[in-house]
Amino acid sequence: MNDWIFQENPKDFDIDGYLSAFDRVAWTIRQSHYKDQIEIGDRVFFWRSKGGQSGPYGVVAVGKIASKPTKMFDHPEALPYWRTNPEEEVALRCWINVTHCAIREGKLLPAEVIASDDVLRSLRILRLRQNTNYLIGADESNRLNDLYNKVIDHQESRVSSFSWTIESEDVAWKVLDKSAFIHWGTGIPIAIRSFFIEGEMAPGEKRNVTLLLKDSEYPAHIDLETPSTGRTRLFWNSEFSKAMKSSFPYHYQKYNQNHEPESKLIIRFYRLDGYKKYKVSFAGEVTEARAAKDVNAEEVEEKGPRLEGGVREYFGKRYERDPRNRREAIRYHGLACNVCGFNFEEAYGERGTGYIEVHHLKPISTFDEVQHVDPRTDLVTLCSNCHRMVHRKTDSILTHQELQKIIRR
Picture 1 (tube, helix red, strand yellow):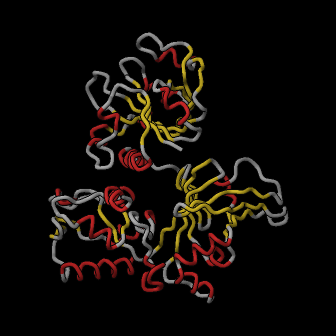
Picture 2 (cartoon, rainbow, N blue to C red):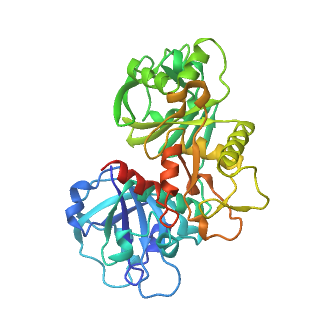
Picture 3 (cartoon, one colour):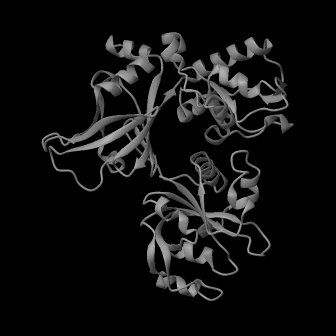
C-alpha cells in the first residue's frame, strides 16, 4: 500500500467545487510511471495549488483509491468545473472515493503549516510543484493526516461498543481482558463487525486474516458462531499468543492467577489490506496517579525537586510533563519505543509495567510560554536510551525518525 498527494491548479479547474459536489471523483495520472504502484485502498490527499492566486493553498480533502489506473474517459460531471479547455477525453485515470472534504466547510490544511513541520518540510510537492501525482512515505502520510485532522478540527466519527472503539475507517482498538491472554482471542461486538467483516457472514463461517506484529506475520481467523449465540470472535494462533505473553509477562501472570493487573493493555488494529491484513500494536491504560508518580520520579532524577513556573531548563527550555498528556500519549502511541521497539514490561516484568518515556516532537526550546500539547500529534513514546540520544546534543536535537535511520545503518 502507498499514499499519495494529487494536485490540481485552481486556475485551470475548480477543484474546490468538484470535490465538494461529489463523493467519487476521477483523477488523471500524469506521472504514468506510478501506474503499477497505485492500488485500491491507497490514501490520497487532494492538494489545491496556489495557481497564481492570493490566499492559502494546500490539502483540501482526503480520499481512498477506488480503482486501478486505466485509460478511460473523464468523469462527465467534471466538465462544468473546467476553467480552461478540458483535458484530453481519454487518459490514464483512476476513481477516488472522497472520505472527507474540508473545503466543503471552507477549511483546508495550509501549505505553510506543512512546510513548517519537521517531518513534512521536505515533501516533494513543496519543491517540485508542477506535477499532478506525488508518492509520499508512510511517516509523511501519517503526519499529514494528523495535521489535517488537527487543523480543521475534524475527527472521524467514532463507534464504541463495550471495550472496542472504531477510531477511523482504518483504525480500531480494544481494551484487553483475560480472554485475550488465556483463550487466544477476543469477541467482536455487532457494532464493530464492519471493521473486520466485509458483507455478511453465515453462521459457522470462518474467515482468515493476517496479523502483522513487529514485522512478523501471524495467521488468525474470524468466526461467526451458531444462530443461537450469534457471537463473532477473532482468534489468533499460539505463536501470536506467545508473543503477547513474552511482551507482557506481568499481565499474563496476573490473568493466569485470576487477578486483575494494575493497568490495562490496549490492542490497536491498523488496516493494511482491506479485510485481510492488519498491523497490530499495543498501548496502555495507566491511571493518572501512576502517570503522575512516573513524571515526578523522572524529574527528581533529572533535576531535583520540581521548580516553579510552566517552563524550566533541561536541555534548553522544556515544558513540565503533564500526567494527562502522558496517559493519552501511552494510550495512542503505545508502550514500545517508537525508535527501537524496547518494551519495559518485557524486560523488567511487574516493575516495568505501564512505563515508557514521553518525548515532545515540537522544537520546544523555541517556545517562551506554555503551549497547547496534542498527545496524538505532538508527543511520541520512547525508551530511556533513545530519549537520551534524541536530546544528547543540545544544538542538534534529532527527530525520532532520524534516530531510527541511525539505528538501522
